[in-house]
Image (cartoon, rainbow, N blue to C red; front, side):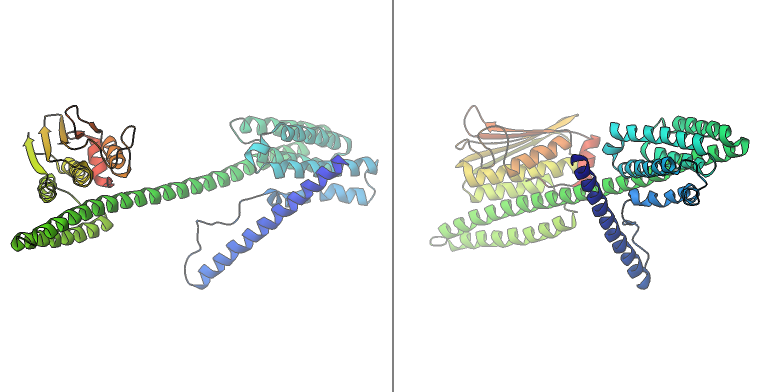
Length: 424
């Protein structure tokens, strides 16, 4: 009963596989007809369903000659021949259907079934000859479908020589050359076609995976851009709005100046968001330092900026500008500092940026351990991709310090500047 149950399960699996193949085939044919009807070209990305064992079933028609001999009574011991034909067809179906799954075709059971096919083919060919010799090309086809790899060429050649030798014993040189050549061609061509089809589909799957990852990377870049832009801009607007509210009762001109700054910051934010959407936003370290001083002053924090060294490359200015923006945003929002120092030191091989405050020593984007959060984590990843580093933590004198280092003129720096993923 267990054997019959396994056979029924296998037949059900074959029927399900055949139904799926027919469904995908109809879908691909409908897509081709729609493309031709619309005057376009068929979609080559979806070239139909993957091949299955059903694509190799028609080759069993090569055995019609032996089946005809059985029906016409020209085969001695027809019951033995009939059982042999049934066993060969069953093994052929078993091997070919398992050949389209890499794990199953490399399993020991598939190899054993293929070996039994070889023994059965040899017995039928030696026992009956004639049309029964055509089982050797079918054996070569099954071997080519299941034995793909570096040993296929040697296996196909040895199988062809073996088929030719058996055919010579039964029918002479004419049958030997024909059967040997047909066996070799069937094994090689089958393996080549199926291997190429499998490689093409794997390449398509890899290309789709790369496209999916590229989309995810672009979404991450865009989300970081928006986080950094909106977080900094809204923080500045909130600080300046509070300053305008405090100044309005006693100094209306100063309050109006703060309101004018709010308008300028909002317009600049709109421009930067548009540029971020198109992916062409560039930053200037000098501009970011000026904005940082304005934001710090509006928040009641004394800004101190020191800059030394040679002018920096545009790529380095873009990255360091992001660091200044994120660090100053954290100072304004969370540090309760009275003084913030921003130091830029350029050297021949690297440049160092340090942002230090004398506040409470906490950062909004810093968890209990290490550098984390959305802003500092994004900056850390971006500087690391450019060959630099970012460190953040409490200062020995109190407060919080963010230090960024970048190599000058490195290939990684140029590559990161081209892709322009936003920190945040």
